[in-house]
Image (cartoon, rainbow, N blue to C red; front, top):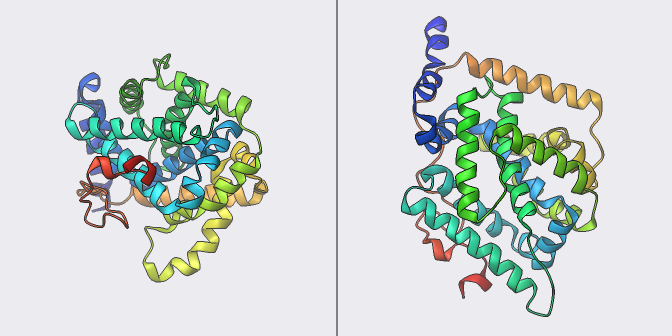
Length: 308
């Protein structure tokens, strides 16, 4: 039985590598996110989200709008809805296109709203490109570090093409051609532009509960009170030194980092020996506190000053 389980574990990878990646890149990204590595990619996506809060200029704009600090749960839910719709549907159909249009509208409106009293806020192409890069690069790296197997070359190409498609719909220019190009841009921007700021620290304080939920969400609810303090303790080891500095967090000890890495490798060894997932880990639509049935309309997703 164990040998049959291990043999079947790579069937989906073989399916992925048999596809035309230049055509099916969004399908491959969805297979990885919903079937192959759902938890690992949620962890990486969370790190990518925190990258978007870390550069001081970006943190200042987000703190100024007060959406993440004043209406934290709703803003995170809205982001999750739009990102999931783009991951679930790609950009060839109406839902993925509607989601990216609404995201663009939210970004434009946030700048206008911040400048309504004479401010001069803006979001540059490089800032958009960094956020795009951070989501993809950290999701792939989380799989490479903690998943039951690494991303294949075909999956890396699919990831790059999916995010280039997203970037094109966002109006981002000068995007790298390869995953490695995105990774180099991400790492250079992180090293050059990310530093401590009080705004970034406030954003972390407001949103860190989201990361806690990602880390413990797979556990039975009765274990959450016990697991939450452990999750909060290990988060700096997952964020990395640049983000810890940006948020004013103490750098994790070498012993803690080693223990977290060992525990996640033990998990990956266990997952490698289990049967492959046959049902998606993700819903067709994203339920949230405001839309528990997932019955949202895209124009309703966003802050009140956007909707009204």
